[in-house]
Length: 110
Image (cartoon, rainbow, N blue to C red):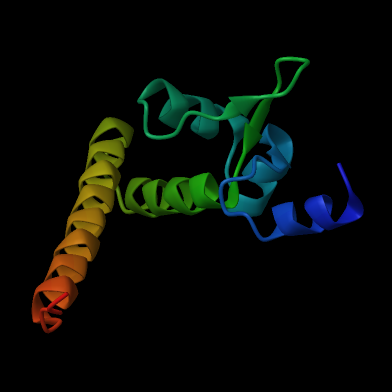
């Protein structure tokens, strides 16, 4: 791996750069919370060669949204389901917008 490869990973939202301790610290929560949302299958952290959980920035954003809901009194299982549904809706809306853009483009005659 080159230095350039390492720098590119810093911009990769899916690169598992954060340990469980650092992720919990960044979110202002406990490691137990991260384990609980993992057990609820909201996020599945990657594992290091030593078996330690590693989280990406994308996973931390998902976890932060779940924490907001839990802090508002939503049970953790329900919060995880809500976040999953929100994520699915966002993806469906993105796909729909892409289809609309494609359909709006004039047909090219070859």
